[in-house]
Amino acid sequence: TSFFDGLDTSETQLVVFNPPWLPMEGHTVIDKAMYYNADFFENFFAQAYEKLPANCLLSIVFSSFAIAADLSRQNPIEQELENQKRFTCMEKLCSPIQQKASPRKDWLSQIRMHEEAELWVLKKSSQ
Image (cartoon, rainbow, N blue to C red; front, side, top):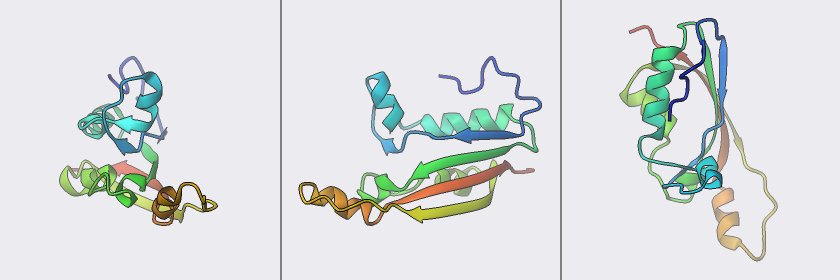
């Protein structure tokens, strides 16, 4: 789907994006809140680059769960910054996930020990 169609973004100063953070195909509406397909981030960043004004900040809240769980090798935001160069990282903040260990779900506790919540602030690159 389109992220920005039908919106007047000409004077937008900030977009806050909390995308799904697991790389898998989602089938239901609830799935699509957690899972992203292979071209999800490419589509988002291409549309954001085309539709947002040059001075607009793009703030993305993300989780490193997929990497910590070995479901993915690279963060899709880092991949965008390294490969496409449409955006520049202005700031990146990380915070470890602090979740109480679960005796019944030790596998999840192990993943959560390595997971971080990330806040990315990006700005369009001047290419």
